[in-house]
Length: 286
Image: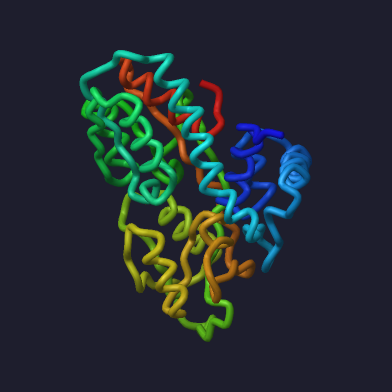
């Protein structure tokens, strides 16, 4: 009996997205293959790892106990590979993270890189996608993890980490009057999710008012929980949110959001090593 790395990566993807379909897109497998992997995992441990609640896949008690072990096993695997492939690197690597991506696994991945390569200083810059894209183009960064969309377009050389649809998060028992301007919670200018939300409302002819402004998605969800506004966020953030948040299917359909890895024109050894570790963590070919 053994826990397979690929199956554990798929298990984490299902847990983080709350959906077999979205997890399949992240790990580059079919939904049927993802379901088969989860059944194999459940047979191995003799208990279900998920149960379906309000349309989302949520961790069972067994799945909840497995999760920290899954992260440690995958991290140990990636750490060993990184140490063997790049044993003696040193210096600095400059990475830019969109603020919304700081709420993902990126801090954990960067911490793992620092443990493997303690002689490399990781210089982290946070900002919106437009700013980071400009910094990368002017050689102020070595690597950037960008959320693309709106005014931040995908480049041919971008490496996709994951994508999923944006959805409208709303209070399950919302008392908002649909005849009055729709109150929305968005990030400041420069956020692709903001651009997508406001463009969709404009195209649909829906009058709106920005009533809550925050570049942190949890703050936007807090406004939704208080029934102060609706927010356009990745499906996994909404499906995995606590009651009373749900998806509003009456509002205009939103596009997919993509998180990509973008390198400078002439990446050095440090940059390539960090890029490899990030791609491996998201189960993408290096």
